[in-house]
Figure 1 (cartoon, rainbow, N blue to C red):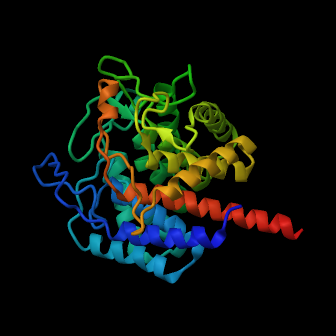
Figure 2 (figure 1 turned 90 degrees about the vertical axis):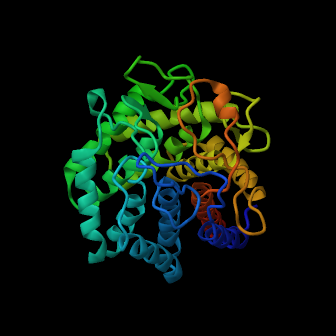
Figure 3 (figure 1 turned 180 degrees about the horizontal axis):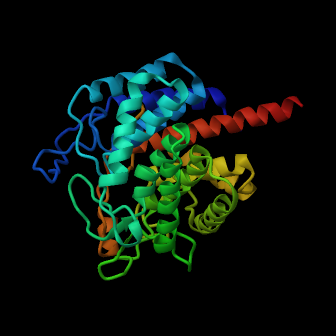
Length: 367
């Protein structure tokens, strides 16, 4: 039986652990302009911090606590007072949480940067054939490439802000990106997703069914439908993709409750951030009635694994570091382990969803 108090205590520790993250010099990857990149500290403006802020913003929605709102607002006040990095796929990620904050508060401080960034994404982000967002990031250009990460980092922002600001062209673009990425990245044999596709050579690189890439889809797909107000045939199509992926995930879940960093490769290590993302999507899908009891049970097993990998400081352990496109499967097996903001955020999303399940159980018991 889930203990609500235990989950809430761990959620607060996860928030503390995320805010305390600092770059220790282990990874020092230069950006394209030669400046050092910081993909670990909570105070940087990159995709790990962006995902971290999204987890924190959704947790604030759940709790309504002033201290959680203040953490998010203070972060954006500090960052927007500085010179922001140029827009690319990964530097767009922090705009997602800002769009959630603005949607809930309508605070005028956030509207202008959101408008400006959305316009830059639409006008300036490089495109592949068929107008997909090329996965250009701070440290690599990746010409002609689609990556599954792009949907979480860019399309969720366009969907949420487009709906909230009544800019239908942004929502339409986010739908186009989802459909295009589904077409080129889903593996019809398994229902899982490949990490990437290149139009230069027209192939899926190592055909890696990489766990965290799949988790961006599992965690993000239902959120995309919710944030963008997606209805009708597009919603039905995407839910079909989720169910197909879920069938494969249930087949490959390890007895510990985790998934391997290559989902279908038991020789690769078990990885916590992907497990948290899968658990979140499976539990949310079960709560909404679009996935079944088997998905809920798998999500609960994932929850127990993630809880066992949160240390006494609230830091999520056994998280794989940021992963570029691999040209062979060994590349994914060799990615090092490093605590990150996205590891914290995906765990926050999972635990907050699990609390909703305890609330549902308590309601059923009372009736």
